[in-house]
Length: 192
Image 1: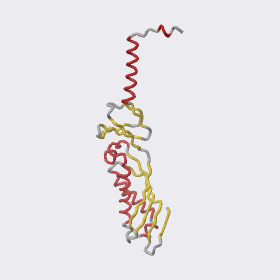
Image 2: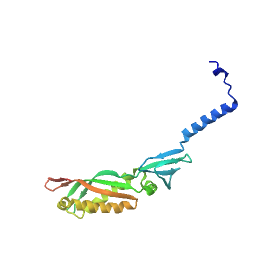
Image 3: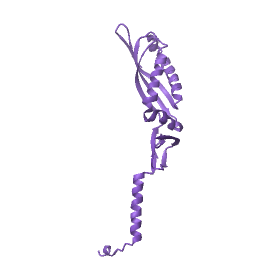
Image 4: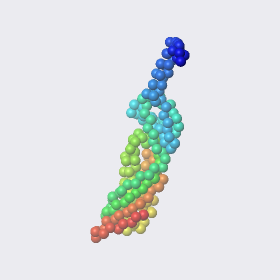
């Protein structure tokens, strides 16, 4: 019971304890370690400037602490959008297009620099719209319905070429719904 009262702490022990507390506090504040999950690539942003070097999955030392690391998902991702367009015979139609894509992990920094964290909305979705519009101009309304697999293949080819310059690969494209407005007021609908 009196044992605790007789502990004699030297200056050396007190300084060591305070030093340990300061080191732990600095590690907590500076967070020098960063973990990049599986399937992601870390993009280094140093004072607002994107660095060309990327971090692969795993644990990395982040020095200096003013560097920000943005994790970019390089796994296969899906987006689905509604596209409004007109066929060759000027019949308006609405289509739902689903696209599976993935990023080139080694080029994640360039993708982040060109499109930011919202690259899907800035790069991919507008390119899908443009690609389907380009293909739809070559078909009349009936051909869009009857040749939808060919329309999807041509749209995927054009989309792949558009996004290749941004290092985004298209894995598949599907037209999952097509609604063509006819002049008689009736609609031709095909869910694919």
